[in-house]
Image (cartoon, rainbow, N blue to C red; front, side):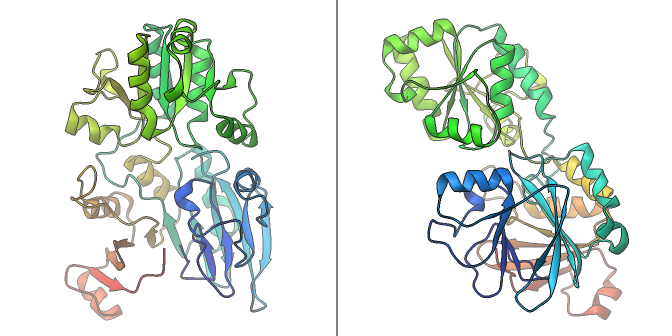
Length: 392
């Protein structure tokens, strides 16, 4: 996204001309435009994210910034900005950016999960002295129906359930980055190993996860022989597998006749449970699984709706811009993102929320009284202001 206040782009790398670039974390959907030949401007990231990007593109030029330290970075026109990195509690290396300068102070959360230390943001000098001009907010689960428990509670519930089924193969759906603590928690509680691809092993090492319990798989689970699967099942193991291969891996294990289970740990599990009778964290003692045998758990690296409200209440009141386009009733799990906007404004007393809908339309919802809205400029009667998109 290209910020409106200052020539800074975060997690968006297709802009030209005098822009500073920042990467909040190394998930693929936040790297669009980056490639091994990218040379559009200065690029900044946390040390871990830098390491992860260099694993993918060794020739990329990236400046690593430390967390908890203020940096002065010059702009192309002779001015400078200050930037301060905050742990986003999302995946390894993920950070929030606090930008300050001639434009005031702007907080860009990136993807994040609320942590008690986030309440200290309000005491940082730029926020304490200037307030916030705008908050760019992770709105992935901005709807009251999303009530994810803590990741620690869900991990404990998963290990409790599968102790009863041990030993077996537990296939855990995971991305190339994320859920490292869940995988290691299960391995520790079940006194077992985590099998990962060689690429994933390198990623975990770059993130600081050095453990003898993490081992490189002898082969792809889809190519595993019957003897290998039966041996691993008798020993017991946690096997990290991609989303597209989860069920294929389960079918392969089923054909071998070994004991196995599949886990999807995702913040979308609540929607899936309601629509497809999936289990949630509240019915852990019931053997409820989807028709294809996958256990779904409400485990999320993003904030629940209540955590978004709490986070905004920690901070000075400021206009909000959603980082992601809002959902619609026609989405994967059919919920209305606009409804979440109204409820967030009411619950957190946000003065206004700017958001976009695919493909390019951008709106702002304001809580100002109608008379004041008209005095400040052209607004439609329902309180939505159509604006030109600032880029995404």
